[in-house]
Length: 356
Image (tube, rainbow, N blue to C red):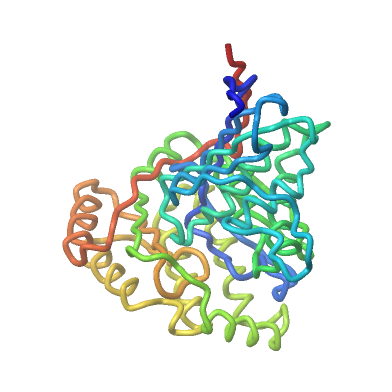
């Protein structure tokens, strides 16, 4: 058996997840154009690539999906159209395939995220953005943050044929607080919302992310909503209502007005419910009731909504009330979980570590 040596170098990459995506659903192909506000937060998705000389490795490409306990060799492309091209973790394998790493390099990719899978916080987008950022260091030239986001979105839509908007990848690539204007799908301009440190710190103190304890899954409800919006057209009132909440969120933060931001979050959640009542689950409604009872200013069911996933809460001036809300929510249902978050000033970050 060939003896494997230490890697020549290691590439590290991290990218934030996304919460409070006001204007979500308008960043899609059926919306045509959209306006979206979102916030990049820790915990990060992490990718680490250990690079070896090809002669030292039995398998050229290894994937270690740490959250799933999977470590396996990536096989060459299927020889028959009937065989799947990507196997255990198609998103990861497709990203490696797309980036076209030189054949004389062998490497092992380790992926990890503290954010639960299926939390409706764009975790898969964060993983893909971090993955592309790291793989980019093994190819000629460099991608900008915007190109990384577009590449991640293309992999999901064009290679894996999944329903996918653009805002999750943009938030992970850019970080911070973003106002995104999609002028024609999938092309968009991104305006970072720059606010004073005092507003940044206060926003961070007031926000809470509650995981409902089970993964969000796309469902027949989502397919029904998509069909309805596709038939209604980009200018329909349902999409317009969602777009307006993104503008209101941006303006509220520039003014340092947390009451207005909370109102925009609630308006967006109500607009989601008008798309289909099933998008606001009974579990989300219960969390909202507890938050309202203790003076929360707003709440946003993250992502598209539906069963599972998570909800962002915006609490009032008093930290005690926030702690009371979290305590009562976790006592209400053993599956409900507060996920500690911190605002991320940066998007995808990549750095190289030489090995001895």
